[in-house]
Image 1: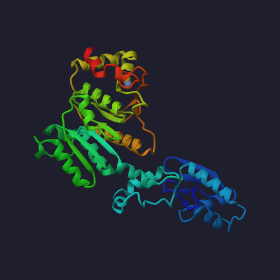
Image 2: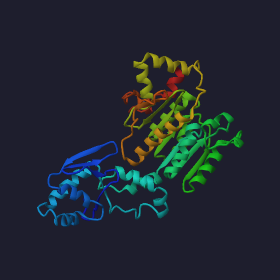
Image 3: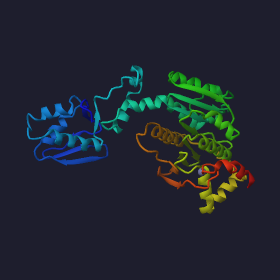
Length: 380
Ligand SMILES: [Zn+2]
């Protein structure tokens, strides 16, 4: 804590209770403190962001002269560890412009709820502004994801799509209109999102992905890849996985399976990759193995259901993972594990998890000398 730090109780940490009992919190998480002398309540009232620690000590001394500066520093440190405080001296100068402060005020307050005294909540918004995301697919999930990224201030997006608007897309693909049927999605989506947030930098790439090389060509310089392109279903997961591992770029991906939303995050070098997952499923889970083999041989058709509430919820999960990866306010939820949400009861949980395999041909140490996952699948 610097001498200029001005501790301020967060709005998420209101103080209530009476007498010797102090309660702090109230958003689902309340901390109880016993305060026999009244000094703690007086201290908390002084932590309004207008005083440095020395000024707090001086002002508390008028009623509680026996309390030392060290004791105050110890208490403030405990409040900080509990997440009750932010530094009112933290400034946006040199971090964000005036317009950005106003446009993303509510984001910044959200980041402030995670901040500690040593943090500057404005930095989190700048990280979003400065980051580069490649978004593969502008269909149901992709159109929501692009709009949400523009809303929360992601600065740079490479958007990849080749398809045209169909009438049946419009139960969920919110960037398109009935008059757009037959038109290319890419230009329409980019134009509408730019009108919503003219500060977002979008590179539009009209491309049907057919190989790992195609993916490599659009993820150079990306901090995160969000893949919601779903055709061809099995192959595209391999191509995106191989490219993200090769470039060391985290991948966030998900989709719908009729009544279920699923998503996961792959962090190269940390979590297992998609090929690690497949190999573990093949080794341990007969049902999933049979399902994967059936899908590969095209005996199971594509999913022709897509319901908007599951699309918007999946979008929230994907964007939440993106925020965690970019800002570090919390660790990713779905790193190396498939999370699922079932529509029937909105129960959320882990469906599967997997480890990084030392002998994985995609992400293992000898990957350069072994055939790629795509080659292996083709050989089956
Ligand atoms: Zn792997």
